[in-house]
Image 1 (cartoon, one colour):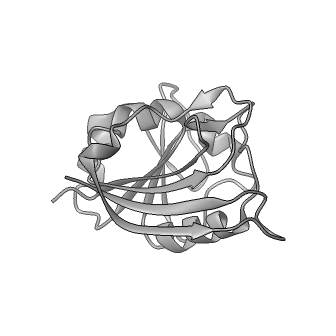
Image 2 (cartoon, rainbow, N blue to C red):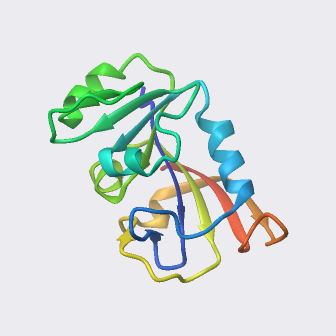
Length: 162
């Protein structure tokens, strides 16, 4: 059983970040991220970990992939994908949460994607890898208008590899 999923918010041109930060503030997306990942394992790169305002995310197993030989408070550090796959093989759900290099490494290995498509084109320096929507079945699609706590219209997708 493939327990790997990607969770990501992307703009119209697959943009995901700039200067090691998010491009937008969408309260609904942050709440969805928390609801989906809490109680599960999350895997991220070192720069993504460093961008978290309070360090390791609570109520989740935090795994950081880096080439550096470092220790990180409240997180497990691995130097290669195979070690992560072995360490998480018995986990029910494992979410790849970024950044771009991890998305590139895992996009062909995951069974599901929890994708937030943001109706915006924003200057970015980090992008989600191109993928063929035809290879994915849409299990859920929810459109949400911008509002007081959401800067942009956006659509939540739950995708499963065909």
